[in-house]
Length: 189
Image 1 (tube, one colour):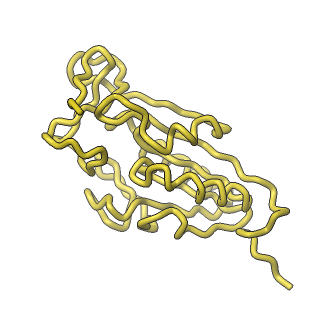
Image 2: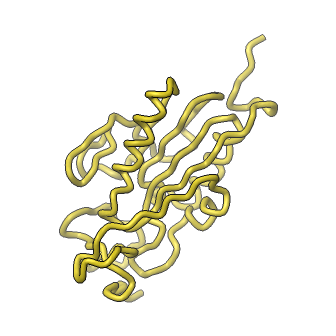
């Protein structure tokens, strides 16, 4: 009788890699490099993005400079099914919030290696879920920076330019700038 690798209690656990940083730091570009490496190594790559992210292409990961990779667009990460040996890549994981943690844990328990990318600090300067839960579980953590739009120092924050108090806003160039901690002007709560 065939077994279901997703629900198999004997599957070896997968590994979690977290790529995080502010907007315009190259997180999606780094994720695309991980996808290419997995495929070059013969892995089946499952590429996932949040359905709410329709900025450049509703059915592909897209960098701000135009690189694209076809992706499964989902409303919730529990829609993703992977088996042992699969490599799952999730972009903009902060759009899923804390609801991303149980499905990621299930994928890892099923033996899938999971790599997530997204903004770990919101425009108020606070931690973005699910990074508060994922970073301590990560076997590999890559916190990357771009350049501060004001002074050129390494960027650590995404500063929102549009006037809204919503915590999650899908935006890009013109809506946000990357800043260092010294130049960061958080949105008032």
